[in-house]
Length: 380
Ligand code: OSB
Ligand code: MG
Image (tube, rainbow, N blue to C red):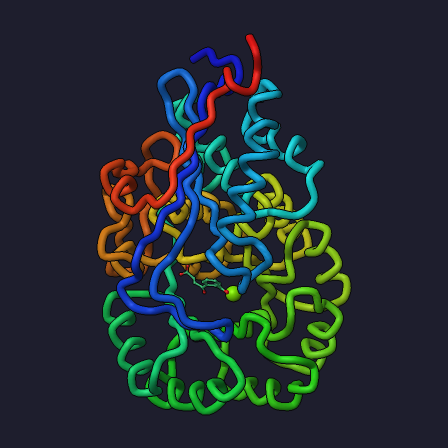
């Protein structure tokens, strides 16, 4: 079918808030709901959807829903209207002139990818060169009020079929928790994530995690601390996995050259979009470093995007991609994302993200809505 560019005439931003079914606590704090931005791009009767994973507070990274809204409105949306983009990937070069703000950029890029795939009548995984029809699913469990509560939650998720469990750790909720989990679940595929809660002074303590046969230890130190990660990795048996530290293929290269990790978690929002995510994926593949797909507790729209990306060949571990009902009582999409008894998620096969956003539910969760028209930016 002939198509000549994306021809976007309208873009809409939505600020939404959705309550979690269960609070989510990390070393950064506890949250009961998620506030995030949806981007909709319209062209010739089709609509592409993207999700901006920045949250209300600058805890995971410096971006917030307010900074992302500002960057989208003042810089990225005008960029899209001022250039006639042939492909979603062309946005990457246009957005690159602005420093930082990867989550804002990724939300726009994802919407463009969805639109392009819909124009071409292909599911996103097909545009990306994916090779899987199902992806392995894991679950990330936050810090709980007690060890008993954590053990119960793990039990429930295992009964639902999840292939691996990730638990959040922080000083005071780490070694003894891992010991209890291992005692009850000796064969469990288990990993931990500290979201940067430690420093190199904790090196000896962290080495204590080696005895629990963890698949990996994710982001023990601060985001900007590749060097200290390499000092720890040199002395630890368990592979380190970097999340917050990897913001581009260039930072991935430096991390691998320094030996800061042996595994990389890819989050499309953290690395500014699919183009950069695929560069990291390809670079890691060439260097025999496996990757997996991280999550930001996205709605079904963002998770559908993540599922398509996870079909690439070097995604080698179960992902932080769980069923809709694990996050939200009512997800924004139909059909919901479900997990098979084998602990996998089936990759949607319809064009674009391959799931249908439910406009009524989006409207009910929306706090702010703004419409941008090409004609208001470009005098034709
Ligand atoms: O560090 O991986 C993380 C959620 C919010 C912010 C950071 C992280 C997480 C998760 C949740 O671990 C993963 C998911 O979306 O299921
Ligand atoms: Mg993480």
